[in-house]
Length: 106
Image (tube, rainbow, N blue to C red; front, side, top):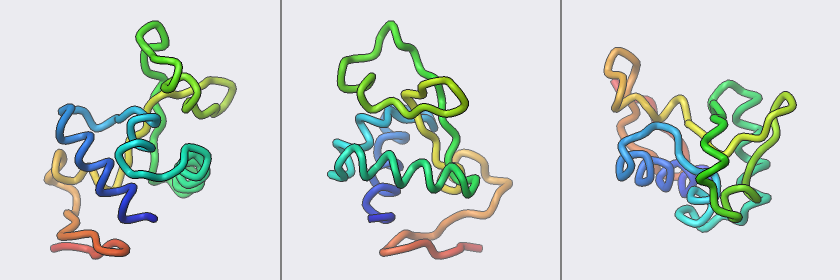
């Protein structure tokens, strides 16, 4: 499941040009059920690998609002996977490929 979420995240962030993607869109793109994705994101958030973003609730669809994750009393519509934004921040290590898990690049 990790690989399909990460690859879906990469496709979405590259297509939008933003590192934070809609949690609802990530569920659709990855093919992972929403509740399962939310659990995965919260676990990875606890490990410091995900940053949640509030997003714009006035523009959010009902599906995006349903996908929101509550953190510290606020509901977040967006998620950013920290370790996989390296293509945007070249000073950090890069990931060569993801295939059933992560492999550290050079």
